[in-house]
Amino acid sequence: MARVPYAEAADVPDEYEDLLVSSLQGKPLHVYQSIGNNPEVLAGLRSFLGSLWTDSGLTDRERELVILAVTSEIGNRYEWHQHVNIARGVGIDDDEIAALGRGDLASFGDEETTLVEYALAVVRGEVDAVAHDEIAALYDDETVVGIAAAARGYDALGGMIDAFDLELESGTEFHGWDPR
Image (cartoon, rainbow, N blue to C red):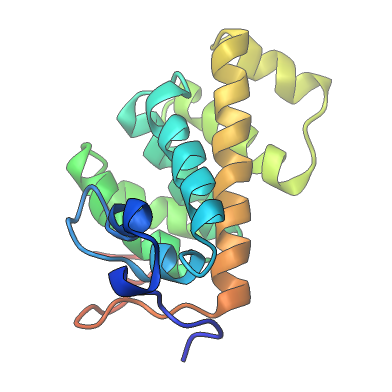
């Protein structure tokens, strides 16, 4: 059982009700419902996460590679599970998803490998001049900021999910780190 209750629409002011609902899935998600215990924080977080999706400078595929790599690195089953289906929807196949779950980048091209390695270095606190120069050779400064923000943003979200001990939504089973 989660350590904080899952807020329902009736528990939050009217202007925050829609924030409990996933714009992709069209239903309330435990992650938003838990944070909904503080509606102002939920509003800020949804705005931040939304900007990572639309303003990071990454393609949908690149964004999902970063998110899956980060959630695998931190061992966050909840976000991994949510993003497996999103990744499939943007053309990342199950073999690639499974490889990210194992931390195996051998099947990715040089640019995607550099992207994922940089995102992991950000989360690990290991970005050095070499890692920065490699990512800066592929992306402009605006996108490098977007990559770092996406990596740390999903790292932070994963930390909250772990702190609250969130469960997967009813009727779902964990895809597994290898969803094939």
